[in-house]
Image 1 (cartoon, rainbow, N blue to C red):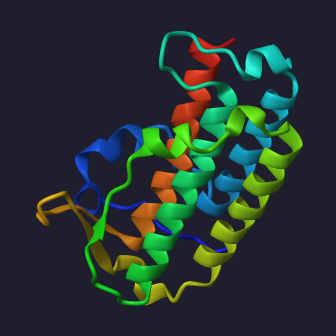
Image 2 (cartoon, rainbow, N blue to C red; image 1 turned 135 degrees about the vertical axis):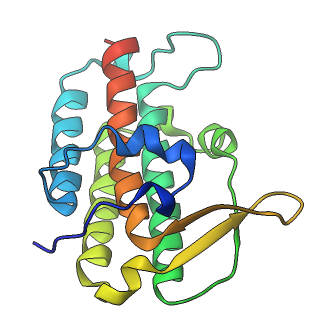
Length: 179
């Protein structure tokens, strides 16, 4: 499996540090992505439907909503990585994660349908990063805020680490607050 070196702190925004710190630095990031997915899937399938739609506080997401949020986040961050890898320097606007969750209808979906989509997205992410040209991994791109100010600059390789760490962060939250 391809080795993608962990990004330096200068390659991602400060808020991503919380995700980077959760990663196993001795493990190949693409292998870790797949292993994370399998661990999450095993855990979630062991839970009751009642647990999957439980909210530990008002306006907090359910586990099903967290899963679909992870899928959405991974799709968006993989797309950004691909754009920057292809040298598209267009600054990209952020997204409102709460609106994505609100309109996902995650709680009405079967767990099988969620994991069918999750697995397809995960395999796509792994294949994207497996075959990106080496020189593209250090290309940078940026996000923009509402007034067009450049924010959240990161390298292509920082995206794959962000995706893996973001998922681990949500897995940790599920274990701490839902179980």
